[in-house]
Length: 229
Image (tube, rainbow, N blue to C red; front, side, top):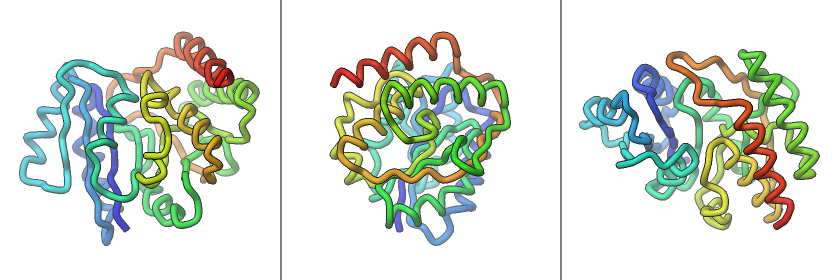
């Protein structure tokens, strides 16, 4: 089993080093690489990582010269990956790396494994964020006519081969809405999608980048655009 872990960062200097250490703990007996894609962070996250991991061949550091955004940073990491499986997760401890081995095992049976807050057993510690995201998801399910419970989680595994069959440029732009675009195009390809319960924690350090009113408008607008395809 082999996997590339993609970690997009922006001002995560207080989270990323510990997160990488914890991820490695769960990847024993797995052929892995960790790809950190820093979006030109003012707090020098990328440079700090370069210094910390300069002798560690299992960690790649990519630093954007200018800000390109969350989704494009993820896509850049994917394009620089070398393993057969991909695991995408946030770098602020919202997503718990303890789930990664289980996700990887399940890729033998399903095309996409998604850590879900809203399937049975899933939960989000930040309840205000959880309720708002739940409302977004209800609207997305109506607009996109999908049975996926969590269209905005963004913690998932997929094979690089399967992802390469999806239209990357039509998916990876903007912020968290890239994930429901990915699920939309995957469904059109008849990919099997399994949601497994995940606990989404509060970020360990720093401020959230989410702007809920803007996100609500942006996400619904993007969902209606997909319906026209």
